[in-house]
Image 1 (cartoon, rainbow, N blue to C red):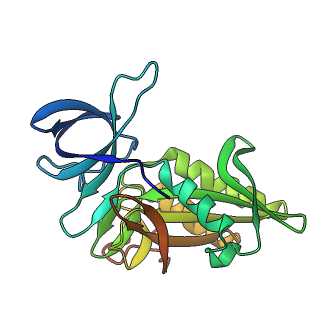
Image 2 (image 1 turned 60 degrees about the vertical axis):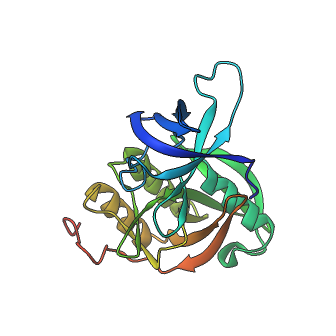
Length: 238
């Protein structure tokens, strides 16, 4: 996915869940943070970052936070991007598990949830939820980085889809290139870990991918092993 022209900046501080302050040419500017995660490993004072210029009626900020230099690689901070990246890759036939499937709908309601993608092939449906991952510890991409009731609910919806005879999958998109595997982050949200592992036993498929991140483009890249537990700590073991 091509990125718009980006503005180089230096991150200063997070003001609230969706707002931060950065320096552009030494001038402080208000920045929209399109990610509700904690992002503590990314949003550190002094980190170089890149902003996308935005305009529009009703906006309080002129910029969106797009990329952050995490020291040895670039990482995408935009939690809206993974669904678009997967859609693009599926349509181009670059995702092995979904090759031959077409995108039938996006942000489609299922029960009391809204799932990111609905795929179709020969009349069969596949419901897909896409999760943005920005936290990497010891080479392991971890989700979530804070309690996620919404994530737990999505796992339940995917289980219901399988029980109704559909195919269902969760795809974790690690928005940086430095992960070697993925695992649920039980220390941050043991309830999500339990819901995730239950979903696997019910037939929900799980996949994870890294991203190739550059100043002009972000692409879905390499598949990762999906681990049922984080090797650095099994949380409550649920």
